[in-house]
Length: 169
Image 1 (cartoon, one colour):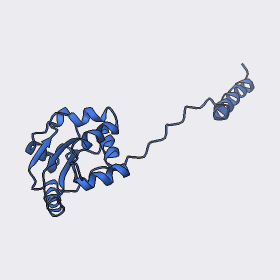
Image 2 (cartoon, helix red, strand yellow):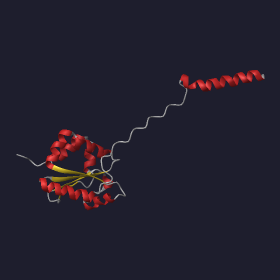
Image 3 (tube, helix red, strand yellow):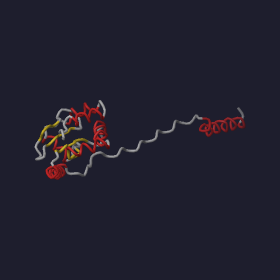
Image 4 (spheres, one colour):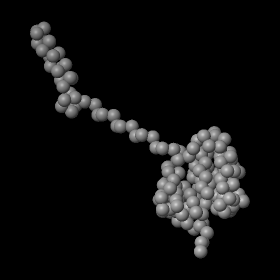
């Protein structure tokens, strides 16, 4: 191989290398990174303080309290959030309850609140606690019941809540 033909081979290889993107031989493009989902729960909120305020609102308006314990990275919590905040459903929910959403991410001060209501986070979040107007526990989902419902979609969550609505005249 003469030096001239070696240069020709090198030029051909370099041309092929630089033309690869033009003929679709380049490496696959990186997948676009999905934007982070907006948070459901306020991570700065102090749960016990917020709950005390909401119980006072419940007493003043004669409504029970619905505590929704969860985390922002929980897929079942997102299903529950959609169920609760569907506009028509939400209007009816707030006639019955004062909702309180509390972030209980492990290692945060609010996580200790789960023990107060005997909720086992290992069995799944979110968890609901229903309180009467005075702040006494009526019902608590302690074993992942709401997580199981969320697997059946937002309608299953709404049905569970509707069953706890008080009948009005």
